[in-house]
Image 1: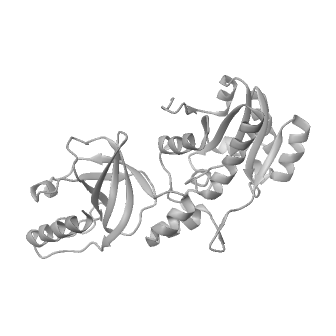
Image 2: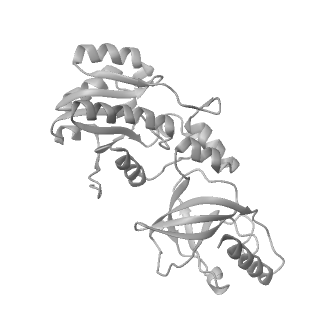
Length: 311
């Protein structure tokens, strides 16, 4: 898949052999592309600018924890590969290589994996990682080993130190917690961008349309969600932004207990059918908690007040 900025997605590391010229790789799961991940990737970008060549980010899907310890698998910060590719393209990355992570892949010796990168790459110049990156069978690979293999196989290694904000290390775990807490200002600092999620629009009961506020019912793609409630937000669809309002939760006034958790988005100045389409929703400000009203009329009055506040 090729994006408008020239970014291309590769399906596994063997496809590195389709790239002409020297390579500068950034390796990691990069769940969320927070500022710590960006430091790793920008080391590869800087190497390519100084030495010439292409920048390739190599990541792994599904998340390794989902394969190795599925009961501990976290929700994602960035679930969409296409979303990740868009962000990487803006950073100056040429290719995103998505390597399938399986139990067999996890069982490969660390040095064999690096040997594959050297073998598939036409001219591997740089491998950029975080300074505490561990990889390979029995966690046998680390930065020290990587430097040894670089001297042997002819590539240089850059290792980015952790990025600190407010005296704490930025991590995907910390970002997820801030999202759960609804602390979107902290999330913006750690991601270097506003927080948004990607989801598919499903057909609903059209109750909001009857109230005069048609909504898109969005099922989010396994991404971490902020607290339930009413939010001002921005919906992105086919390259355009639409300001709007959203309710995240289970719609207690009109649904039975145990209803599916959904993000209902009412986008101002949007007309069209979104069923089956994928949209992004950027959370802007928290308006109020989700609540159960005594009547549909009370619900409509509150929605009208919420919309006026957001507008």
